[in-house]
Image 1 (cartoon, rainbow, N blue to C red):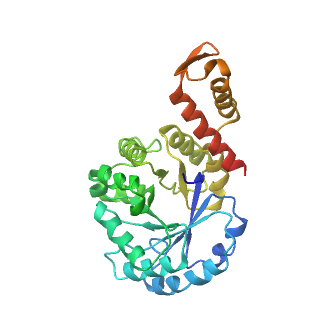
Image 2: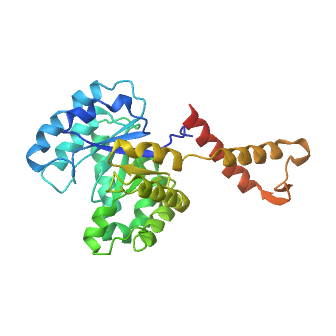
Image 3: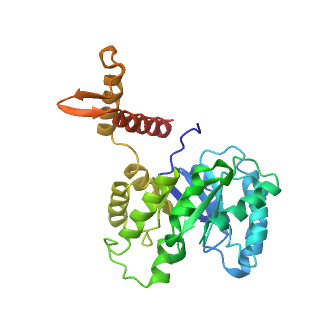
Length: 291
């Protein structure tokens, strides 16, 4: 069983932004996505790719996960991006514009053919109408370790652009699709990250969006500015009350008189072994964050 890794806060940093890259070791986020795609102008993409080896050489001791978002494989840069990223052995490679399971399988074949270790996982952007229509089949790859699929990232800006829906503060027209993503991710046993919040200056609105995403079941949120890290870390971490309740459930089932029982009474309510599994998962998450 893989060790749990929190992904409460996942910050995009352009591969072309030397000043931001130099601060990675000081950031309190759980993961950094070094971006070769949207955050890098076409004229700078080859130069940005050439920096990858140096970036990873400078972070041989990783406090947080390091992921590379490449350009779509259908673009002129995608194939070379994938090879360059694989050579750096990041924790993950984020594929944009994923439409079908085949997109992930082909990328996985390239990693296998180039002897990338199994620790290099694939993350997938869910940002096209076609991806949403195929999301169940895409997520099912998560059940097969050979596929390397490990995480979904909601590409909300692209979904808005592709569908023409109205953007509202409560994201009411996006929510059905966001919930569909969470459901698929859970079916596939992979993590699910919410999309970015574009106005990084409005931290109150961002905090509210994080709280709503956590309530929807997201594991964390993708970020565009370091100022957003603290709020995301707080929103997607178990509260002290939740940890105390989980511990009480675990301790209750550990009592000799409850050995072998499928259902017990605790503080006036019925508690099943499925609640024990939930409690153990929450405690593992809290322990990982604490460490």
